[in-house]
Length: 352
Image 1 (spheres, one colour):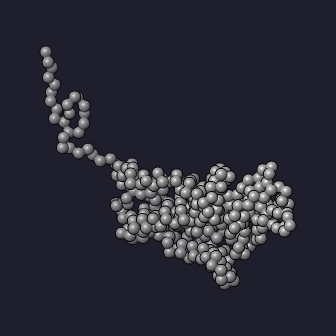
Image 2 (image 1 turned 45 degrees about the vertical axis):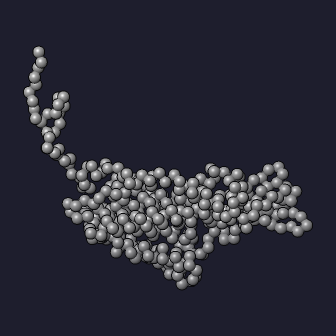
Image 3 (image 1 turned 30 degrees about the horizontal axis):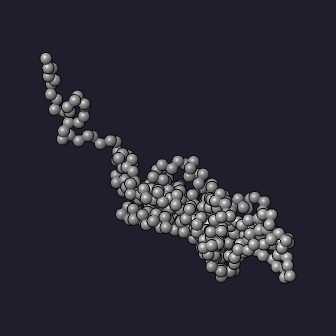
């Protein structure tokens, strides 16, 4: 005997429960940033960027060896044979370590600008800066600020202070608007008092381009901080953040490559070569064995020097840390980081 079940128009066949045909499911609870499906939607159009990220260190390492070999193919192949990949990767990490807090803080600032500029009841579209602004915990932001304060040069610290203050002002504008307005003004005045004399001295005492750029880096952030410590028009906020994000993505790899190309990846020595005409050769050591040494001189030429011709040898200091502008805040050169200033280190301006 076949048992007939009562037909329920709202129940699908097989006894599975579900919404009736033609009836839409109720939407989930709204969030300050939009519907829940917007928060969990994968950024499929940016998968190419994630796939290209591992290629950036390899490209920088190849570019560094190409410049070190003076753009000569056989010399570059010789460098690939002798240079340690671990040493290159360590130099790369040391050169780009400053870029990590810069990316986090600037991206979070752009996301906070989007939130502060949005119209009431119209949340902005989810983007990478907005994810940083809403999901980055406070301890991570504080760690990034501390790391930047220790690893950035003195002339970049006003930019760090401006970025941190603008982020705080945009975050607290809805809750404590008075504090969000007064604190950037007070800190901008303090930064002007501290770095103003150094900026004026850098601008007037030396016409060198690096000194003029240092003066702009020291004085411009305190002057523009009170102007930028607030939202922009909602109609232009998305475009402003989009263009600034694109500019950051273009300029940051360029700055990283420019810094990494100047970082030494081989020990530099000065060797006295004996013979009828004694001479001193400066260069980078590629290899040393029981027969002699392989040296890459400053002109990019590979020299094979036997042990019978080697006289005195001197290890040269790191030329990338040589002070070139002679500008300092008290006893702190503007080209040195806080770590380099705090650690015992002899300042030199004459690399061998």
